[in-house]
Length: 358
Image 1 (cartoon, rainbow, N blue to C red):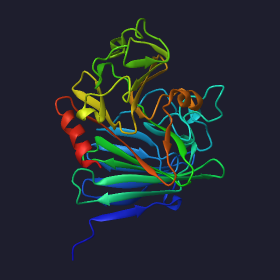
Image 2 (image 1 turned 90 degrees about the horizontal axis):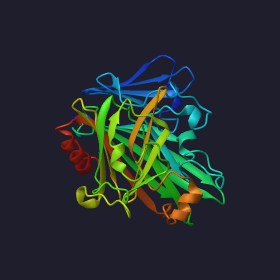
Image 3 (image 1 turned 90 degrees about the vertical axis):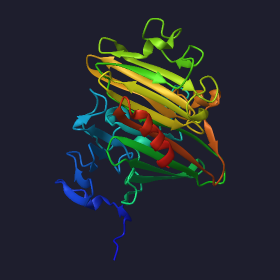
Image 4 (image 1 turned 45 degrees about the vertical axis):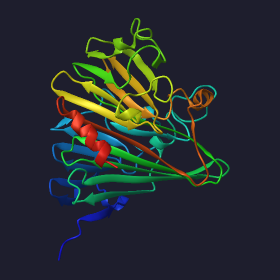
């Protein structure tokens, strides 16, 4: 009798204890559960050359991602997650879901929390999908947020993080459903926080990469507003204090020339043979936000944050026309992927994510 090669591991908080618990071992991967010192549930996935720390009940965040034992996330931020804190005081994850009712930094006109309710929300359900017949993406880390606020909004957001067998590529397949009959205004941003390399270079599927295509919130490098190419080289002697924030609007000012314009691709070459990449379906995630910071105390290279709009607060983005709307009972798909591969082979992984990661 052939064993079932596709199954679901439903999670509950009772399987997370102070000591590590082995939940499942499969061909080339293993799953462990534990609690950190603050009582936050952590699911560890070891797969291929990767190790992933996922927080199934705290924003559904990917707290850390290591490849061959080396963390891929930013440095100088919060070391350990906790419940009951705001965005900034818990800011330490590699991937943070931001939205849905709001996103970005609130202005005096806004009343929403920084980057919305998702980073400080707890998913109502979490599970792991195992597909041993899928040799490319055998594991999916899944969670669902349910929000119902009378007179305001009711939605269901399900985020699936598909992990490839080598542990060096991931696809995020999100589905947002409006449970009200009334329209839902929504925003989303994937806060992907890569490390800042000693040396490197950024590249974007926007040609020409000029002042007409890139909007800057602040000018931290001389002349970068007039010549965005000045932000492409990466080096440890460059100071971004407090930060550089740039926005590319692929629907209007900065159309992508990748994948017949359907996808926006960004890369970070670390000058040591590795290429980090982010690709997003611009049908809904039609903006790329760039977030760079580097001081003696911290460094981060959020070189491509797929988003529905800019991070300037709900009221301002509403005026700019970037806030999306979902009709009553309707659903929308939010799709993006990221990975780290050999500089000469990353394009194959991008293509695989697009063709097989859906």
